[in-house]
Image (cartoon, each protein chain N blue to C red):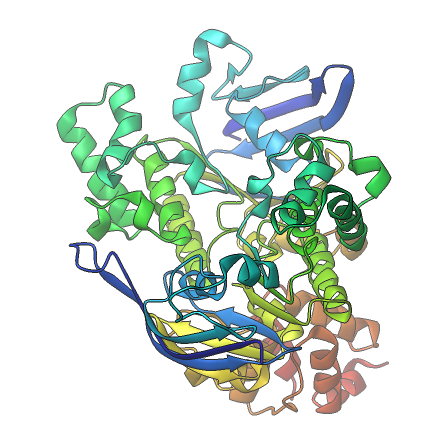
Length: 277
Length: 292
C-alpha cells in the first residue's frame, strides 16, 4: 500500500509551566495516497492535535510521523513537509493576510518562488474550484463567513499541496456552503487525486469517507469504513458523538424489534423502509 | 411586545462604489416570551438585522421599536437599550479579554452602572447559571478554559446584566454535538428566569426545528417567511430559493411521501419520526416476513 502519511505510535502532550495537558496518546494510523479520511471526535478529543502533528506543526514527544517517508522531526525538511500538507482552519479570519483576495492567494506561492505566470494560472484554477471567481479583486473584509472560508481553501490550493487537511472548516458555513465545500473537497479528491483529511463533528460528513477514525480522550478508539464504524453505536455514544439522523432512526426501529439494516443516509433508510412493501 | 419593525431597510456604504443593500423593507413583530430563529444563507442579511436590535447598526430607514425604545428618535438611549438587549456574537469566546474569568464577566454589569460589589455578585450568579464550576473557574484566566467552557463564560458575560432579550448569532457553531445540546438547553433554562425573549441565528435546521417557536427566513435581504418551523419546513417549496436545507427528519418524511407513504406532520425530531414510521404501519409486513 502506498501511504502518504504514516503515524507510528505517536504521543504528544501540551506542557506549560508545571501543568501537562493530554494531547494524543499512542496513535497508529496510515493514510493512503489519494484517499479521503475523516477524523471525528468531540471538542478536546485530540483530533486537531493529531492534525497538527501531520504537517510538522507539532513534533511528537514519542513515536514518529512520516510524510512521504520524511520524518516530520527533521527540521531541515519542515518547509518541504508544510508545502505538501496544507491546512485550512476553522476561522478563516485567522488565515487572511492581504487586503485584496488575489494578493491573499498569491502570498503563499510567491513565498515559494513560483513564477508570476504560474501564480496567475493557479489563482484562476483555485478560485474556480471554490466557485469565487468574481471576487478576485475584492477585499476579504466584505465577504460573509462562508465566502471567506472558500477563499481560505483557495489560498491553500494555490500551494498545490498533496494533502489537504480541513480542521472543522465547514463549522461556520450555512448548509449550502457546507455542501459546496464538501463537493469541492470530494472533487479534489476524486478528480485531482488529492489526499483529503477532514476533521469534523458532523457524522454526516463522514459518510462518504474511505476511512473514518473516531477519537476520544486522545486516542483513536475506532477506525474503518463508515458502515463498520457507525455500527458500533455504543463506542460512538461513549465518544460523545451523535449519529446521523437516518442512522438514529434505523437504530431506534431496530430497538423496537423491526428488522431493517443500519442506514447511513436518508435515501438508504427510505429504501429499506419501503422495501418489500 | 419585544421588538416591532416596520419597513426596515439598510444599505451598506451608501453613496459609495461599494453600495450594497442588505435589508429590504422588513416588517415583523417579535413578542415577549418567544424563541425566534432567524435563518437564511450566508449573506442574506441575518447579522445585519440583529445588529439593529441594539443599535450597533444605526437605523437609517423605516421604524424599529425595541423594548419600548424607539430607535428612530434623534437621541436613542443607547446604554439603556443595550442593557436590555444582550448580544452574543459568533464565536464569542474570541472576545474574552480580562485576566480572570470573574473580572471578564463583571465587565458588562460595571459598564451598565452596577457598583463593583453588585457586579461581582451578578457575575457569580451568571457563571453558576451557565453551569461552570464558579469556585474552580473564577480566578482562572479565561484562556485556560476549554472551548466549550469559554463559550459558557462568554454567555455569562452577556447575561450578567440581565437582559430582557438575548440575541445570539450562531450560538452553537463549532461545538460538538453534546456541547450544542447543552448550550441550547441552557437557553431554554434562561427563558425560565429573567430573559423572556431569545432570538437566535442558526444554520442548523435540525436545531431550529426542535427549539424555536417561530422562524423568520431571510433571502437576499428580504423577509420571505414568518411563521412556525413546522409550517416552514413542511412546505419544501419555501426552501428552494433560499439555499437552506430542510431538517433531516423532514427530508426522510418527504422521501417516504415520494414513495407513496404518508406520515403525520408532527415529526421534527427523531423520536417523533420513529413513532410516525411505526404508526404508518409500513414496517409491519416486513416484520412478519422476517419475524420468525
